[in-house]
Length: 133
Image (cartoon, rainbow, N blue to C red; front, top):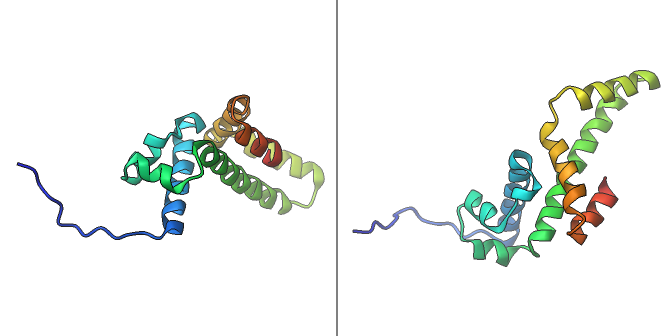
């Protein structure tokens, strides 16, 4: 016997749905890498059908490139603020190197590396990596 859900589903606006899908793509990229950002993975993360992901995005290549762009922009802003808090130029370099090499950024490092590699076959991602990276 099949069960029907009594939970009322709330229809999201296109902007809310796109934001939700983009957030899911970013989460997957950080947790598993850019190559794990697939139509099915994003759909599963959000709890919708893959067709809904396809409907609300401009294609997976764009969704992956946008996830990369958002993630690296946030990282660059964080690093910029971190080194701006230090007056001495040599100390700034030391803070930057220490932060980049302390092992806490392996998730975003994988995103950067995969963007360069995947960009060989994905023009949109390559353009974004060249522009943002």
